[in-house]
Image (cartoon, rainbow, N blue to C red; front, side, top):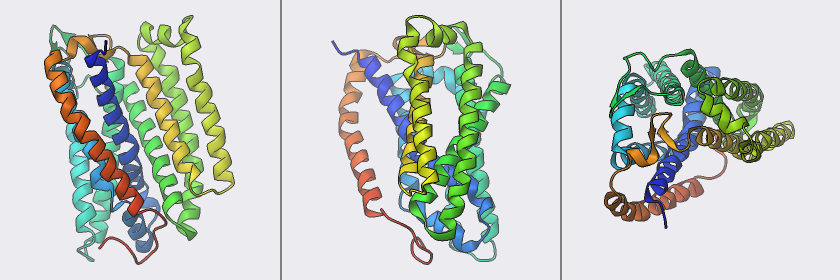
Length: 333
C-alpha cells in the first residue's frame, strides 16, 4: 500500500530541490556580478538567464504552498522559527526581480540597479542557507507550537550553511556562464569555477563534520553499523563527481561542468535527506505527525499529477528554445 504522506514528502523535497538547482545558478550569477565590471559582460550575463529566471521560482511557490497544504503542522512550526531569514529572502528576491527589469530601462541609474541585483541575490542566498542550517540544527517545539526565541535561527552552524550555499550557488553561476557564454567572459568563468569548486568542497566538508555533533541521531544515522553500508556511497560519489568536474574544467569543456555541479548539489541534498529522515522538523515532528488527513492528500495529488508535468514541460521547452551560447548585443531588452 502506498503511504501518501511519504509520497507528499518526496513531492515537497523534489520541488525544493528543483528550485535550488534551477534558481541557484541564477542567484549565483547575481552574486558574481561585481566581479564582471564591464557593461557588455553584465548584459550578456543577464541575457543568459532572461528567458528562464522568473519561471524557476515557480518551484519555490510549489514547495512552500505544498508544505502548508500537505504538512500544516510543520508549516505552523517552521514559519515562526524562520520569519527573519524568510523575510530577508523574499526582500532579496524582490530587489533582484525589480533590478532585472529596471536596469534595461535606464542609463544613469544602471549601476544602482546592478547593486540591487547583486545585493538581492546575496541576501536571498544567505537567507536560504541560514534557514537550512536552522532547520537542520533543530527547532524548539512545545506541543504543537514553536517554542523558541526570535534569534534561535542565528547560530555559528546556520551561518556556516549560509556561507556554504553561497559557495555552491556561486559554482553553479560560474559553470552556467561557462555553458552559455564565450570568449573572455567564458575564460574568466572557468577560472572562477576552480576557486568556487574548492570553496564548495571545503564547505561540504565543514558542514559534514559539524552535522554529527548537532545530535547523536545524525552520527548514528551516518556511522553506525549497518547504516554506514547505505550512507558510504554518498561521499564516494561526491569524490567521483568532483574528480570528473576537475577533469572537465581542466579540459575546458563547456557543457559538462554545469551538469556535474548539479550532480554535486544532488548528492549534498541526498545527504541532508539521509540526516533528517523521517523528520520534517528534525528531532521533533515526523512526516506522519505533520501530515494532513489522507483524504486531503489524495485530493491534492490529482492536482499535482496534472500541474507538475505541465510545469516540467514548459520549463524544458523554454530551456530548449533558448539553448546555445549568448552573444553580446543580442537578447533581452
